[in-house]
Length: 311
Image (cartoon, rainbow, N blue to C red; front, side, top):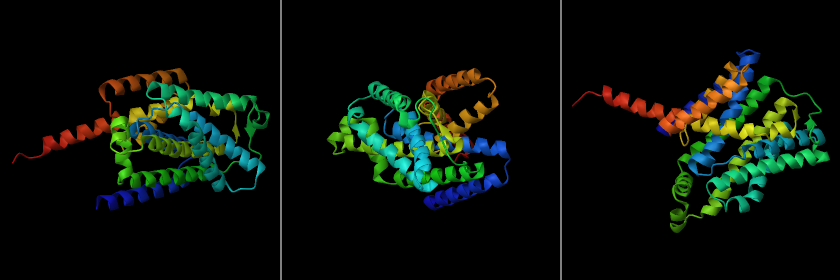
């Protein structure tokens, strides 16, 4: 029964998001697009770090690669946009698989630093590669789709990610991920192939992030290495996931809403927004380790218990 309600709720939400551009103005539609991309990235990072324990600062490597693959395919081939997004996701997964043998032998802070180095290495490759446009980057040689179309593409991508998560949460996969997160050595002794599990999760989440980067590139109509491989993608994604709540089903949505909406309110004061995000991260980490979503769940449970009549 609960599963049917969840599926019905997801269908209703997706339908509302698909119809939203018809009723919103240009600016709200733009904000909605940014929110959708943020939720996609935060959901993927939540699975990687919150469920598997792989704290990565390499989000920008997948986002940037997906963006470059998208522009390259549209400029030099005749593939449709949907196929280009899929191929960008495949490129993100292949990058993760190629980098995983080295990265997955690192643990804790060393893994985090390794993923950061991967993003920086890719940025230097793009800057020094003439075929990639160098420091100037690449420009889309056709008109970008309308914002309403971009929103619907992002909704379709997010719906696919949510559907995959709903299936995974009700399967043995989720238990395996949390076993690796809680104690990788014990999980290995119980028969879990931790190394393969981590590679699979790293590849799957990188594919989703690369697809989000491809959609972002389609919206911008241009990519350049300093922006697409910049640390901001990694830091903002981490902030959204942690503030919303690691391991919480609604954590990515809440975190993305907080970070992006506050960023719009403080668009004229970027330093103030950066400071606010930092303060929120510190407060959440200290007083609400499960984020806003987890704290809300605890408060709601206490409220229900308080209202329950004594027998």
